[in-house]
Image 1 (cartoon, rainbow, N blue to C red):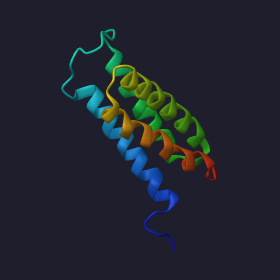
Image 2 (tube, rainbow, N blue to C red):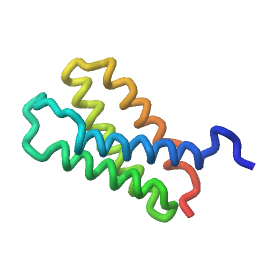
Image 3 (cartoon, helix red, strand yellow):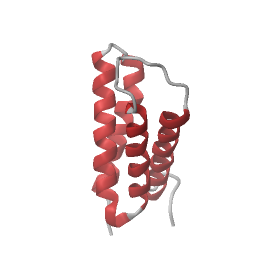
Length: 107
């Protein structure tokens, strides 16, 4: 019997969150902040979508965690560097939410 906060639910929730973030990077209203090069949002969205899909499959879940952690770490450091502490807090929380997923069974 699975509880409301089972590892499976956490994985699905994180996967859905990363998929939503990918869509927002691709199609959301974007501001040209911080002088990132053209196409940066599309690359970020693609990495987030790839992480989202990989998290769903146990055999490649660690690769998904690695990609998601990479993107979240870079996002958090960018936000902290720019003084956006309030926006960095949920990103850091997502980064920490990846820890139990990475420690769970992979097959």
